[in-house]
Structures are given as C-alpha cells and as structure tokens.
Image 1: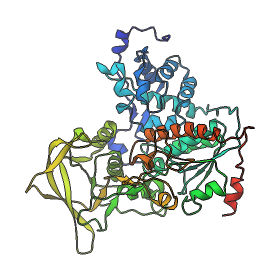
Image 2 (image 1 turned 90 degrees about the horizontal axis):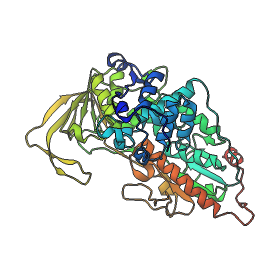
Image 3 (image 1 turned 135 degrees about the horizontal axis):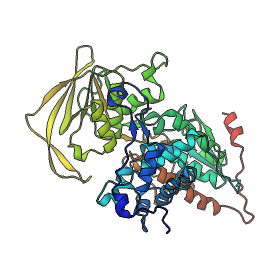
Image 4 (image 1 turned 60 degrees about the vertical axis):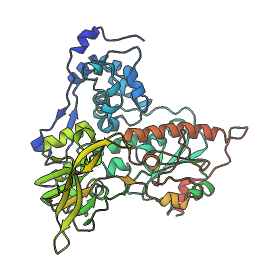
Length: 493
C-alpha cells in the first residue's frame, strides 16, 4: 500500500493525541447541549498525521463493521474530507452517530499499532470530524442505486440494527419498509441516549439519509399487534423480515422498596426525558420528579447517562452506586471521566440491599452494603463479596436502577417456530438467521444489552444474508411471485 504522509514514523509518534473541544463541566452539567464539539480542522489534520499507515492495518479488524480506517485517515490528511466520509459510509451508513457513541477505545483504537507505546490514533474523533464537516456544508449526496429489485423486505424496529440493515438492503436495490412501534425513529438511539451525547438533529439527519435511499418508515406500528409476522409474509408479501426490536424491558434487583414512589428503571427514566422531553415540562406534557439527592445503581453506559442526566435536572447530589471497583466498570472511559468532571459521586464496591421510604410511600434513602472483590466470575471480572456488618444508609429521594434489560416478548409470543433463549433473546446463527425461514434478527433482541456498533454489525451481516436468501427464491426469470402494495396494506389498517 502507498503512503501519503512523508513524515517518518518517529516524527509521527511525537505528535500528541488531539483532544475534543468541550463545554466546561460547570456549565454543561446544567444544560442538555452536546458536551463535545469534536475536533476542528486544525486538530483533525494533526491527528491524521499521527496514523502510521500500517501495511497491516489491524484497526480494521478491530472495527465490527470493518471500516477501511487506514484509507479514510489518509483522505483526511489529503484534505479530501468528503472522500473520507464516503469511504466510511461504504461500511457504515451512520458515521455521525458512530463517531459520537461507538466505543472505539475497546475496538479499533485498542489494537492501533501506535497505541502499543503511545496513545492510539483518535479514530472515532476523526470519523465524527468528517461526518460533521459534510453535514455543516450540506455536501451529502445519496449513493446511486444501479439495480432495482421487486422483492420486498420488512425491518421491524428502527434502532441501529434495523436502520443499518435497511440502508444496506436499499443500496442493493430492495424495496425496504421499516416498522417502528414508537412515534419517532431511532430506537435506543432516541429513547436511551441523552441529547448531550447524541443530539436529535444528528439522528434525524441520518434517518433522512436512509429515507433518501428509498426506504419507507412507518411509526406507531406495533408488529405483533397492528400486524403479525405471519401477516407480513402471507398478506403483505414480504420476502424476508429482519427483527431489530432491541431490549427495552427493564430488569430490577429484586430488593425491598422497589415499589416506592421515586424509584425508576433507567429505561423509563431516560425514555421520559429523551423521547418525551420531560426536561422541558410543562412545555412538553410528560413530567418527571427528581429529588435533590439521587442514586443510580449500575456501572454501564446507561447508568452514566442516567446519573449525568439527573444533574442536569437539578439534583444537588448524584451518586453512582456500583458493586465492583472502577476497573471493572463496563461504561466507556470517556463517559466515566465526563461524569466525574460534572460532579457525580462514585460509590464503589457497594451494593444496595434495601430502598427506604416514608409513611406516604416516597423514597427517603437507600441502604447499602460494602463489598470486596473475590475471584473472577463467568464474566471474567472479580466477583463482589458482601462484607458482613457494613450496612449504611445514603439519604436520597430518587433511585434509578440501571442493572440491565431484556427484549419485549411481544414478537416472540405471537410468532410460532421462533426459538427463544432463557433470557428472552431470539436465537440466531452466524448469518443472523433465526429458526424460522426468511426471518433474521440482530442487535439487542439477539444479544441482550450490547453496543450500538455491534447492533450495526448484526444489521449489516443480516442484510448480506437476506440478499443471498432472496436470490435463492427467484424463479428462472429473476422474478419473485411476492407482489403486494405495502402502502395500500397500511391504509387498510
């Protein structure tokens, strides 16, 4: 491979990793504006110079959707920013989203050759830079679809898995229809991730770009109620279906006091705020009550989103209670760092055992027990062990549990022949195929809670295999017998 940067590797290694431009913590913890503005052009060019242009770019292998990272960074170095974002879009149709929320530090960046002795190239920040550059100048041009096919594919759910699958199939020329149960598109990208991490304008723009491929999206349409999977096949004429409905049903710890007023699942809490804009009540109709002292239970990204949101809603004290140490926390390091900067108090090696309430049924405190770490468990992390006699109470008026979620069972319960695991996830093989012919699945519905980029990977793999499946169903003349007008079917409901 040719290199474009004349600098010697030793010179590149001396360049410091470039930091994003950010709001100061004392201001951002009081607003829902985006925390980071990303890299400006000057910083992006310096960061691009740091890339060693490896002959064997292992960063590509670290990327779940195999973006050609080496080439897109070379294009940035050459100031061909639109060429760079288009190179990314060949593998990932949602670069402005992934540049913001993808955990690059545990994927492409962790295997970066430069990172073995120095800080790795800021691949995610460079991805965001070119996506934002294109967006700010309105330079997006939809790819030309050279072949148009008669076969139709239904995508159930408009989260990252569904949107990615829809885009990939539309580029292949299929007639794609997305069905979303909520009133707005985006799935967990909309209801789960706060505005200060992923502005809705970005999500709306990326959705519009998928629509520009000819994808039709219908909201307020609950598969399993408005129409069943079998009806999509038999009456609507879809040749294949991709299920990407996520894992939106919360799980709880099962400790006393969870029925008290002031206790939320993180799913409900964030949905009220992110989707229904409770933080703008009474301008919007959904209220939310947050005490001056709140506790969030958990150590993942959802817990970080909930606790940082609570500060923005006016909490004076925001505690993050986690039963292991910081080293074991699954949340992104950047989110943990931002939370600390913003004033979140981390209560580590601590496990809640009871939520305490007053005579009126409102939360007044949370009783916790201190923990110590033992041997690693099945997750590979050291198992927390309770310390006897270490119980104590933290005064709070709000408790938010962010301890996991599972799929809503509506599709599984209304679709015969669909294998489901004990956790309620839909069972798939390596091709994202389910036990039912013509049905594919991915994202959190198949994985349980996972990352946005892994959901996108599933959607991309599924699209390729749906393509193969539908090709195998064509008659000798290249035609499909399935031909039902989707718009007409929707109007009839």
